Length: 270
Image 1 (cartoon, rainbow, N blue to C red):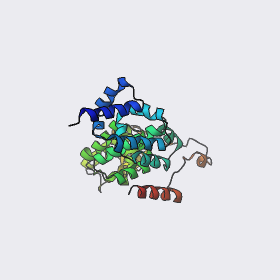
Image 2 (image 1 turned 135 degrees about the vertical axis):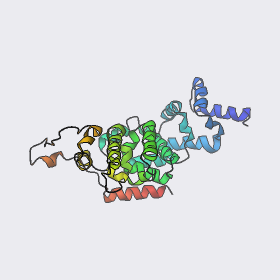
Image 3 (image 1 turned 30 degrees about the vertical axis):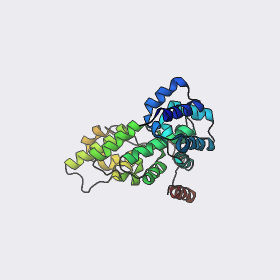
């Protein structure tokens, strides 16, 4: 049981770093675990780490008031999350969305998603690997991520470990891609229309058009449940012949430098 003196030390610490008195009660109610952390051996070193990463006292204070759970981060955890973000290889619009509220917030969002994956059975090393391979995962809300994982494990009957090999599952739209594809496959499986057992990669990795051609087009009754391609489908080129190369999306295959960056990052996790 914490005595009055220890409680006072934590209150004093928060006030010293600039937390307004009228916000203290909300901080303690939002994150009561702060009462378990020592000031000298945990809270002060944590804020020192934040400052050492280049964040101002004003920004740190504002982020703590906004989200008191920040004080629950392990020493070195934010550093690892920011290092992962630094090595990301993704399209610029995705990166802009990740950092739209600043690097500190982005690092904490990575921490929350790592915790989410670990809660469902991945080890931290695997969770970081999933995030690095599928950065779109970071821009989805935790509630949406939980829904995807629950669907994966309890409806689709896949092990959460599949996400290490198919991290794309967490980066695609649940309602528009995951559910329609699953419904088509379940329908075909029930009719005996599948001659082999599909893996998660078979549902997620094919492009929308390829999936349609493989599993929907031969079975007209599946078109309605698949959605966008219901009815007659005729794929026409949107650009003159000869110019298609100019409009190809940028590819982000792992370069030698990317592989080295990822290897160094994963080794730093221990």
